[in-house]
Length: 306
Image (cartoon, rainbow, N blue to C red):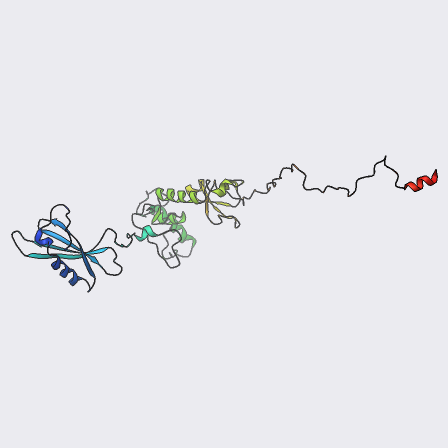
């Protein structure tokens, strides 16, 4: 029997000696040959001891069989409490489970995939609900809607048949639909800030492309401004040769495809060489004849003229 270790107190002697009882219980719970050597015995309380055995199951490296035994007060018989398989300090464990909403990354969605949003998503807030009743003197009140329908009936042969799922003319729903506001939820202020931070990080003024650009997107003809409050800081690039074509870019962003970048920078001219190694120096093969030298005619010719 291996030596017993203690957690907070000395283990009960009879419970600590019940190694074979604990092994038998572990072998009944596990497959044959899976329970290994006895590792330790840990005191869990008064007359309660847990025996740990090695686990030889493939794929459960570092796991241990834990069998807890107990003894009643003044009793000499040790009884079995429970048998479980627990991971040790160096056990091979599966990675911590992460919800799908936290595992999802931009670009993971494919054709046919659905991405449901939670009811309390901070990026969204309720849009037009249609429950507000306008005052009687409002242009979209029920009284004004009846007058408009009466005028339509006089112009046409009969009452105008309403199309399915189309709000009645003059109603708040009709005005909201015309203004593009008839949505169950719209972007909240938090959602706008999160989107703006994401776009600014990808195509903002601090990117290397913008730092080397001749001008910013605010003066580029390829910029398509956004609507709403975002138009004050963002737009969509429409330059097919630009790096951000079809992307939302900051007005402070820029690239080499700016619409007004017509003048190309002049190439850098290198400084002249200290020693002229580009031209060819012409050197004579023979030295020039000296003016005071003896005439090329031989001495015999000179003697014949004397």
